[in-house]
Image 1: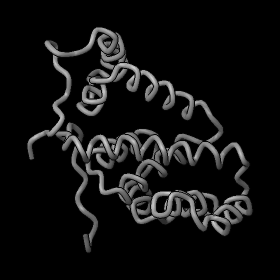
Image 2: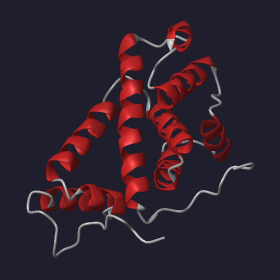
Image 3: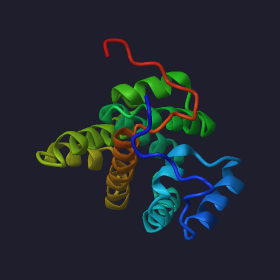
Image 4: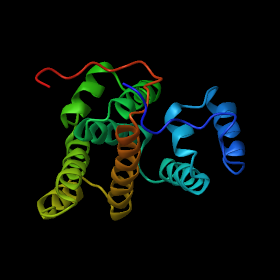
Length: 182
């Protein structure tokens, strides 16, 4: 598969993107291809990074964020983000069975199940008909702040899913096999 939007390179990276990519390389040891692709728009890359940091500092646990990232990426069919977040998920303590369960939308407890159900509703319908899912999330103990942050995770992951799929971004993380029946 050939990229339809090529990542920025040393010869075509906008000046305002260069420090952002340098910061990523310093913190991650690499610049993921998807970030270099988003880097065509310095403002979008800057906003994306800031939004991700804000979510990471919010009321959801890193585990919950990665479960959402994995499930949304699976629902949207994004191999790139699925591979990246399976790796990140493992780094924050998700087991292989946790990752597999998140892909299928199954939580290990009522709270995780409610988060994944709400995310699934939003991905599939934009949020229409979400009353029961919202009630289930509240019954599972999620606060309004946590619910809003879960929606933010759905939104930001849907953005990167769309970029990776539209651009046909080369996967630079260990690939995740397709689920049985796909």
